[in-house]
Length: 349
Image 1 (tube, rainbow, N blue to C red):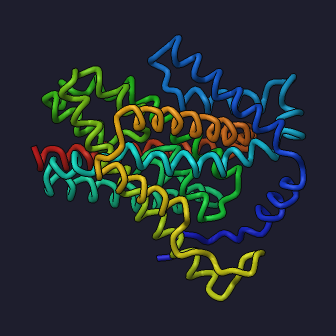
Image 2: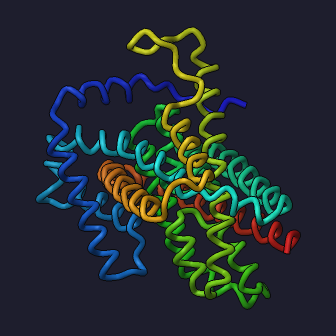
């Protein structure tokens, strides 16, 4: 099945023209936005860092005093942050993947998570196509819902060559729906008769971003939180094969086409190989805890700056034109991932 259908020439031209300008004003703004988001998260811990970064980026693109700067001289650096810093953050994300801990949950849980990811991805992709969402939005939203929110969207967009506006709109929708899950899912634990560990597995299998998983599962205590994080790590582990599959699809459609440098696209993107190498390094146990803590801090800082850059590309009037269809896809995908993950948890507890 061809995952992609949109020609990317226009986006490529736009990116090339932006790269001719200096990136430093935009990069400085992305770093400042990430620091501001960190301060907000410290003051209000219930607000996840990455969510705050996206919201601040969107706000910066629409405030009268900033929007001219954001859309002008800052645009090259903000776009660069959304691409390059995202790749670096995803590589470091592999260091948080405790494969030994994941496998302790058993093969039944592994099979459940794979089934949830596959059903969510394919169901959301199909629904997005039927609703007529533009560009790569169905692909990107399906990726965000099924794997790990904005980080997964950023990873897939690196190999799909997606338009920056499609990436930004998809990040905004997935972030909004994942944030709503923090408030909604804890209210459903008792009606659905879920024990704390089962609730944690449900949250880990059904909520998008790692920070949102932690914020949701901690309401049911440490047992729920531990289960949620481990199940979530299983979903993160599927990021590499999904990105590789998209890259293979793109490469197959562009067979014989060379890049501007004269080389064919790599079958597996370098940052995906870096992600897998980081996960393998973590599994060896040679890294001390302090190194893992610093890597986690660096990962969050890089992703926060990257998501600020992506958020700054959101144009709300354009987003509003597909708002009804995007909201319908968000709700439909939410029902799919919550329902399939609940069924999977009930089969494996």
